[in-house]
Image (tube, rainbow, N blue to C red; front, top):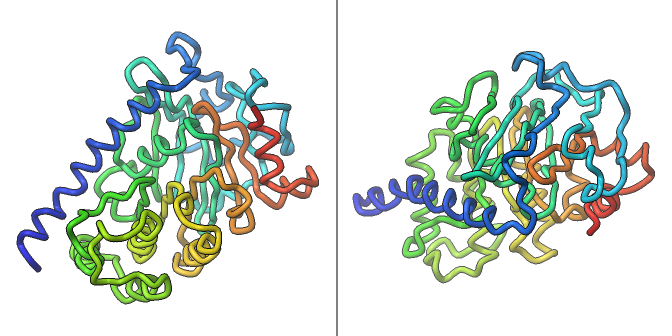
Length: 319
């Protein structure tokens, strides 16, 4: 492998972390309705539980939507977590998770557990804390307080080997080709499948010899998704994977996610394009202002409300 390519690409992770932390802090600082830090961050029903208890501690009440999320004060203090959510083997556990930027809390006392084999939608409007939460799980941001566990291990070097993360923004070196990116991932990740990556990119009609800078925004995102889904990870974190592509390509991308993930792996998809993803989801979380508004299975929510997930989202988050 070219030494210059290796040195350039090895600097990607450090620069990405620095840039994304600054971008997130700037975006949150510009929020129209920041929550003062003096307010209670959570009155969470799980606050007295130990980390090991969280997977069995959901309140025993059915799915409900108590009105408009932007108007309902209880939303910020009482997350609705359905007791029927499967908790057989926790791939991911978040306990009393808090993240502040300066004096503004972005994530406020979040608690949830996701089990193996599930596809979970992390759904919420812009500025709800989705990206911040995913970056903490991926180990790119450090929580202010609280705990995160991936397959029973605290976030660190070992969990990063199990997590494949797709950021919202592309980060590849613009002067390198798609082939260079494949070589980098092959050298950097022991669980990367070069043949799978090439197959996905061929199906998406991506020129492997083209420089990244010559690709459209949508094609850059396709390359990035192909790299992420070509790893044999235990947990996939996909931040807005279909936001920059045309509707005709969205279905293929989502089917690529389903087809290429190992059977026992878990996928978390962050998006606000609910209609496109809901048929692929097992469970969902409605996240707003850094709080979990509700967490349930998609099937149960549909059956009990008689509405699609997209309709529920529009009702909860209507302006």
